[in-house]
Length: 481
Image (cartoon, rainbow, N blue to C red; front, side):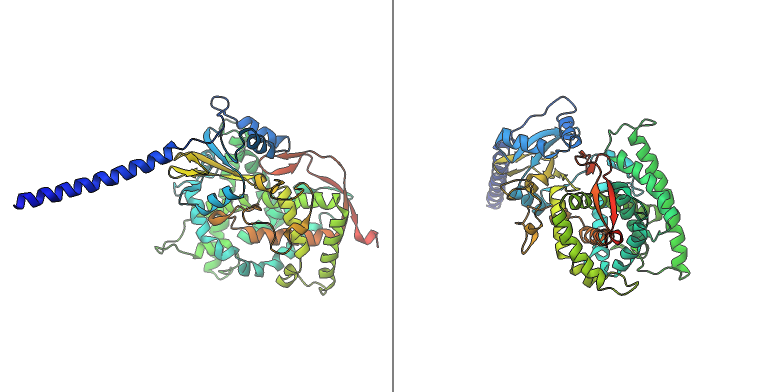
């Protein structure tokens, strides 16, 4: 009888196991039975990478996206980019799906070449380092924390715009890069001396240009120069970190003066503090993250304000009222920033038409389906900002410059995504807003200007940049009054 009961139990366990196996197989079959998205792989090895990149070089990165949406009659299509099988997700519903499933179905992905330019002292990938960084940044970059740095931004902006004065013509993009990099050096590591900033800025330009080049590590190639520049900057940062540790010990530096002090004095959940090289890695990532993105936005603000005098007049009126309310030597503050509503609407419209972040890559963590298509585990996913930003079904007359789109509740959710979205939304969004608005304030209260090259070509590689750096002719306001 005992043997009979044991047999029954074994039979029951077998039936339950078979049931789970059946359900699991059916689930997998249902996922795999869905077709892959339409599309093609292009040429062997390089896939469609050249066409993807060349549309950006020609100034129209959206063409690669919209041509395929039209060809396949689908907002999701497959391709082959950067040596990887890629599915391109387009539209607000795709953005919502990806942003809502971060670290569930998908995770951030960068080409392996990025790890060579940004080597981690902890032997972890750039992806893992980014996750750690995101846990640390919110306290420093949240609006209430950044408020105390507005005066510093204003002070540096005043010094920066001295280099624009007494000049009839300037190249905007290099100057905008100098401004954003100077701010980052001051607020992240308290480096303010122009000579020290310049010493770091030149290798950062080399690093930024080599990061997006073909990853061939041979002497003289942009990729090789980027690796050397990265190593040089890390050594410089380690020297700054060592000195800061001494200054903190001797009371010559405060625990809240910048993000470097925050990193040195903040332990992880196990009570461990970061090593000097680990901090250098993270500071390097922060500096490069804000190096070209904000400067691209500032450059295109100058471009559009030159082309649209009515928009310029609206920004000027708002900013001059704020300037008139300040006493001699009084710096901008949070209340002033809150008054810059029209200026920020203008900046947002610039970010819609010329987003520094054209899109980003993800990696499928598991097999999943979306919109009737199967996405295999390990495939890469690319979402495109332009698929909504200049889509006439999303924004009426999308190529028209219209800051009123951002009045009231603004655009529909998941349609305006210059900073990404969900858990992966750019942690520096509020920092970027402040540095852009301070830039606009000092620019328009000093000058009006005209473009020297009316039809200057725009190159997207990977951020939009005027091909000639946007030369303009300045007209100081004191000459007009």
